[in-house]
Structure formats: structure tokens, C-alpha cells
Image (spheres, one colour):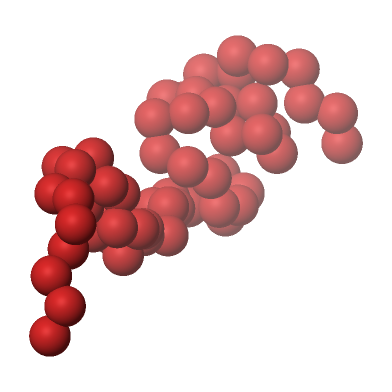
Length: 59
């Protein structure tokens, strides 16, 4: 069996291993209108964050 001519770098190995580690983002449900949004961020559909209106939502 052939031998590698050069040592494989740590970054290259970690890139390869990290590519298998992708996961779908977590999703929360807004209790007011049951829309899905990413936690710890403003809900883009209604502009609410932690029970307060932060952005003007255009409906």
C-alpha cells in the first residue's frame, strides 16, 4: 500500500471532519401567532422579541 508523501495538515483533517457535523437550525414557535423562528432573534413575521414589539411588521 502506498504511503503519503506529505503529512496531512490539522486544518485539512478538521475541515473534512467538520463537514459531517452540519445540523439543521433549531426552530421555536411563537405563542402569539404560531409562526416558526430562530430562538434568541427577532421574529421576522411579526417583529416581536421576548414579548415586546421591536420592529414594525408589514402584514
